[in-house]
Amino acid sequence: MLKTIEDALHERFLRGLSVSARRPALHTGERTVSYEEMHELALQWAGSLLAAPGGPPRAIGVLAAKGLEAYAGILAGLYTGATVVPLHPGFPADRTRSMLQDAGVSAVLADDAGLAALTEAMGPESRLPVLAPFAADGVGGARRIGVSALDALDEPRPVAPDDRAYILFTSGSTGRPKGVPISHGSTTHYFRLMDERYRFDADDVFSQTFDVNFDCAMFDMFCAWGAGGSISPVPLQAYRDLPGFVAERRMTVWFSTPSTVSLIRRTGGLAPGALSGLRWSLFAGEALRDRDAVAWQEAAPASTLENIYGPTELTVTITGHRWSPETSPALCVNGLVPIGAVHEGHDHLLLDEDGRPTAEEGELIITGPQMTSGYLDPEHDSGRFLEHDSRTWYRTGDRVRRLDNGELVYLGRLDAQVQIQGWRVELAEVEHALRACEEVQEAVVVPRTTDAGTELVVFYTGLPASPAALAGRLRALLPQGMVPKHYRHVADFPLNSNRKVDRNRLRAEAGQLLDAPSAH
Image 1: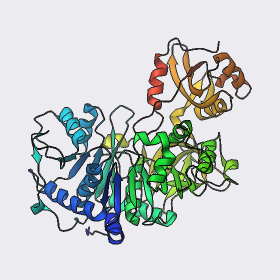
Image 2 (image 1 turned 90 degrees about the vertical axis):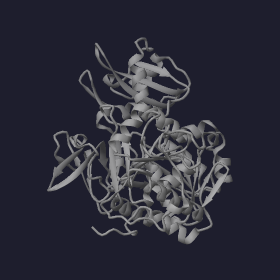
Image 3 (image 1 turned 120 degrees about the horizontal axis):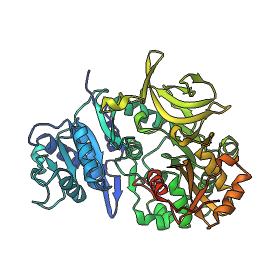
Image 4 (image 1 turned 120 degrees about the vertical axis):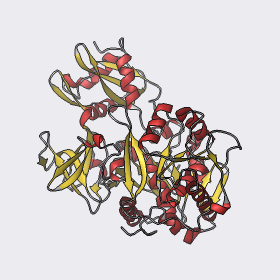
């Protein structure tokens, strides 16, 4: 297949370079990096990686926090024509080692934290070539390679549409991460649709709330760079005064998980008009609640707010709902904002419990140009990909309902539907009922298995209340079989590295609550 630059994900950076050469591509900490500077760094680093011992790498790990090494490193990896594998230096060593091996990584670009993580994962005598451009000489790794201007590429390498652009890892149900390869062709289709939908321009400044190993980070980077705009990573301390940070950076595009809304509300950052400089407000990664959409829209009245949805296997996002204060509230189900219509060029079906297509409600399956060709380990494909109508479809594992206007609304994960004493219980429905209780601000409901069967455990923020009082209020809203028995008040929910509620941690805590407060 013919290789070209036009088919490459990194062509989007070259597009931005052509219109914003001396303007910022990245503003991180106190450092602002122009398109020209990042381009030159990426060409040098790419050439050094290609000249590394062992020959040109087929897959390049980028093991770095959200700094220059991460962003220019991802670009450099793409410039080589190899597959980029973004990794998180804070992950456990066993997990990092598994990802490196599964992805076939044969060279790594790292910052200081990444060097330490790599040494822990692979051992101090690892022979994996490592480029750490800003680390002190002699620090970390038996095969540190240097940056040489003599090895710099004259221009980025071309690619074919079927070539892998990057590999990201999702959590596996068995505990082993699942590698998801995404092709340059899939990203070309995706970002063309994003360009048409949002019309970003060179004056746009994008937030970067996601770590670079999370697929939504790709949206920020390559939407910004394709338009000649810039990205600005959001440090944790910025959430103490987000309106001030957004104003100081002249930020125009905000993208985060919905859990961030609750955090900003608690720090007083959602006052009406507090985020008036934003022109786009985007949320993904979790279900968006209607009251959070309303509060954010009041804080950012000049912005267009969208709820966008998509598994990593479908290239970042695959649907979108544009919030309207006039019409959207009536479309919400269980207090959740619709996820919208499926992207152009794709087909989708809803499947009932027997795997047959149904018109109104069921598991969402999708096929089209954004779909990955399969996991790195073909054993992971079972149960996630199915053949129907002579085509391969991806099973999202998400239950959705089709609204009268044709849009979809998320109901919950298939595995979030549990059986309790014969009752089929939707955890999202119970959470929605809990938020109607005056003491409850936010609520997460998780199942736990006991000798007596499955029980529901509630974690909630807001004002402490007696379990009996909460259960009594829920009995007015839910059938008896759906009312949880156990309630635990918390100051905050645990969040994972991408600021999503860490439900796995809450499930683990629920399993340990042998004496959890009960509504008996």
